[in-house]
Length: 344
Image 1 (cartoon, rainbow, N blue to C red):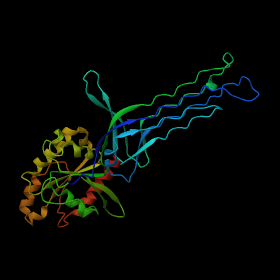
Image 2 (image 1 turned 180 degrees about the vertical axis):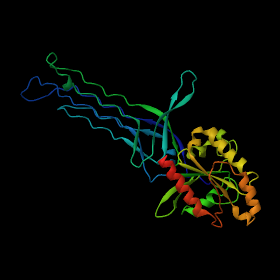
Image 3 (image 1 turned 120 degrees about the vertical axis):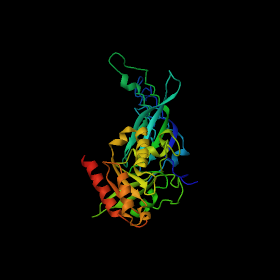
Image 4 (image 1 turned 90 degrees about the vertical axis):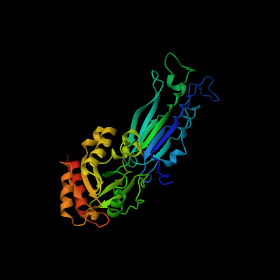
C-alpha cells in the first residue's frame, strides 16, 4: 500500500529509571576503630528524551519500539564512591514532532492529552520523562550532634506514562486542494520531488516535500498534502491525518482545477474545512492557483467568465503545470507571500 512507510502518529509507553540509593557506609581502616561515614551518592536514573534529527522524515521507527524503558542509576558505595548515572534513552524524531502526554481524567474516566512540547530544530531535545535523582550517601548527614549517621537517602523514583507523538510536516508552502487538483504534478514540475501521479483521487497518501528554486539561488520548501474532501475536519476521507500538516506552513496555495463547476465555491469549501479544523489557519497568507488551464486553449471569453468566479481579496493566477504556463510567475508570487509573512 502506498504510504506504508510514512508514519506520522505513534503512541508509546515510556518509563524513566529510578535513582540509585545512597550508601550508609562507614570507613574501615586497619588502625581506625571507628571510621566516619563515607557512603557515596546514588547515580541518576535514565531519562526519556526526544531529539530532532533532520535525517528522519517519519515516525515509523517508533511504531515498532513502542515501549521505552530506561535503566536505574547505580547505588552508591563506600569511600564516597558515587554510583554511575544510567544512560538516557535518546529517541531521534523528525523535525516537526509534537508530543502529548495521555492523562486519565478521573471525573470522566477518559484519557486526555496534555501538551508536552515540540521539536522543530536539528539537535533540539525535549525531555518526556526525567530520570530519578540519586540518593545522598550518609556522609552528607554528619553533623556536630550526629557523628555516625546511619541514614542515607533512597533514590528518587522514575516516572512512567503514555505519550502520543504526531508529526506535522515543516514546509514553507502547503498545497491545499481537492484530490486530483494537480498538486503532485505542480510539485514535480517546480522541484526535484517525484510524487506518485495518476488521474484518480487519493493518489497522494503521504505528504511529499520538494525544494523550489526561485531566482538568485533563493528557494523554499513546498509540501504536497493529500487532497481534501468535504467533511475532512470530521475525519472523512483521510481526515485530520493530513490537515495537521497544514498547520506548519507559512503560506497556503489553494489549487482548484479550471474545469471545476464553480471555482469560488470550491475555494470556499476548502477554506471552510480548514477553518473548522483550526480557525487560526485563516491567519496564514493564501494564494489561489487555477490549474489545468491548458484545457481552456485561447478562449478569452471563457477566461473572463472564470475570472468573474474568483474570490475577492485573494491573489490568483491561472497555471498549467503540463504546459509550463505561468509557473515562474507563480513561484515569484509565492516568494513574495513568504517574504511578506516573515516581515509581517
